[in-house]
Structures are given as C-alpha cells and as structure tokens.
Amino acid sequence: MLTTTAVGRAWDYSRSIGRNAFSGLGLTQVQGVAIGDGDVVYVLSRGAEYVSEVPWNRTAIGVRVGIVTIGDAPEDEELVTDFVKYGDEDGRMIWPAGIARDSKGKVYITDEWLNRICVCDRDGNFLKHWGSEGCGDGEFNRMSGIAIDREDNVYVVDSLNHRIQKMTTDGKYLSKWGSLGSETGQMNSPWGICTDDEAYVYVADHKNHRAQKFTPNGEFVASFGEQGSGPGQLHLPSDVAVDPDGDVYICDWANCRVQIFASDGGFMASLTGDAQEPSKWGKLTIDGNADVVKARRRVVSTQAEWGLAMPSGVTFDPKRQSLFIADTGRGRLQIYKKLDEYQDPQFNL
Image 1 (cartoon, rainbow, N blue to C red):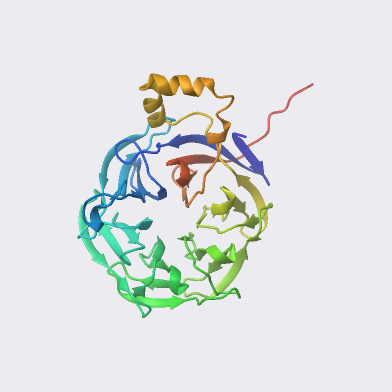
Image 2: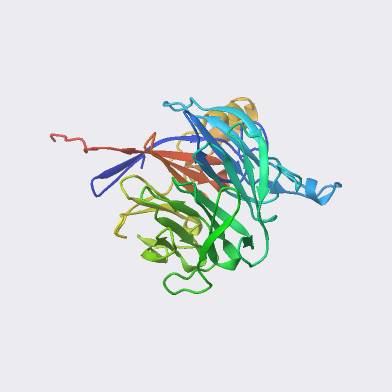
C-alpha cells in the first residue's frame, strides 16, 4: 500500500535509499538519521563484527556515518563522504547507537560500548569526546539514543541505568530522571528519544513496550502504546519521532513496523514498508551482475523484500515533510512524505 491514509492524514511512500554493503554506496545495520543543512542528511551505520587476525578494535566493518544529499525526486540521492569509522581512538566508534545535530551544525554520535559521545563538525571532522562509564551523574551504562532541543540541551538515553540524562553540548551534567520499573515515569532499558517543537521529550521505553512523554525537567505527561502486535500495540519499541502537527511515530522494532499515534495517544495507522522497487544504489548492484538479474527474474515475487525488517530508528524532517525510517535489517532507509489536504479520488462507477 503505497499511500496510507487515516484520520484526515496521508503518508505517501517516496523511495528507499541504500543497500546492504559494508562500504561505498551502502548501509550496514543503519541506526538512524540526523537532518543537516540544505539537502544533507547524516546516516548512521552500526556495521557488523567478524573474526580476523587483528587487534580487537579492528574486528568490525561497516561502522560509519555517511553524509548523503537528498534531492526532491527519487534517485536524486548522492553519497558525499563517510566519517567516524570503527575503533576506540579519538574520532572512532565501536557500537554507535544514536545521532543528532545541534543548532550550530555539530554532529553528536553515542557509543554504546565506549559510553561516550563523539562530536564532529558538519563536515565530519572530529572535535572531541565526552562521557564515561558508570552510574553517577554524567556517567553512562550502555548509552543509546540522543536528542538535542532548540536550546541545545542534550538528552541522552542511559539505557542500562534506566534513565535519561540532560547535559550541555560540552558534556556538563544538568539533571536526570527515571529508574528501573514499569510504573509511570519509570523505564526498562529505554532506547530512542526525541524532542518536539514545545521542548517535550519522548522516550521509547523498550522493554516496557511503550513510549513516554515528559517535560524538559522529566515530569511525566503521557504514555503511548501497550504490549502486543495489534493496532496501537508495541513490542520492544526502539525509537520515536514527532512531527510539527504533534503526530507521534514509534519504531515498533520486533513487530517490524512504525506505529503512528495522535498527540492524545489515539492510534492512527501503521507503516510496514513499501519498497516495491530497489533503491538507486541497489539497482546499480543488481544491474552490474547478470546472475543476480537472472535470479531475481526466477522468483515468484519480490514482495518479501518490500517490508521493514527490525527498524531501529525514525526521524521526521519538517523541511521535506518526510519521515525517514531506518530499515535496519535491510540496510536502507524507507522514506514517506506526509501529504497536506490529501483527498481520495472520486470515481463515478
């Protein structure tokens, strides 16, 4: 279903970007997107580990942040460069988990293994690290999602400490909230996070199978979803985004979909993936291998590859009125455009 409609809204499938590849025109275990200036987006790939006869901090491939330009039309995308590769030295990452930008264009990437944040300029040049392992103020245990509000307050998901920490862009501790549990305001291994235009904070409460909304000071406001696989239900949500209309998008990781809620918590629609054509970069790979072309022509249907596979991240871009979904298991992004004043066609039958 290329166009999904609900409650006077419509989300129109636009395109997919990427293919499963460890380098070049590809993405590997893509985690999320940060929206840059102009046509630029930053795409975070977690990569994959493998065994080789090299030191431990050289045993993975595909870890990187890609700078990609996105045009208005499908297949306008171009890879500009990659930065922040695998390793534990300055400017490198082991298990990248979240990505965000501040008002000055700097890019922040969380590292779940090293429990630190790597800060780069808009071109990918390394600036600094901050963060350390622990359970004290300003310390982290498996940090994951990151969000930065309009005042450049940094919110970091401190996953195995089951809390959110609020920091400055220089890594100075400001405040925290949350504890292990399932009651209102408590969390169990939270994962993704975002802020909206009014500075409210939304958290994907992973093992509580819900998302929670808080004030910037951590006061509970609302909850979205409950455990299950039906409409309005979630199973291990991984990320959350909010658009300017207040609609809430939750990455329903284990159910392989994105669930859409109204600002009052009412369920509206599900997106399960609509990539009926390979991406531009995927077509280059297919067309360049005659055996792959033959193999694809022999299958009954390619429908199995249309859908989302364990999506980990979701981001809404107000400039393009577009939703970016990190289709993690398939090494790509799926993009939907939110349409204003959509009307179903009228047919006289």
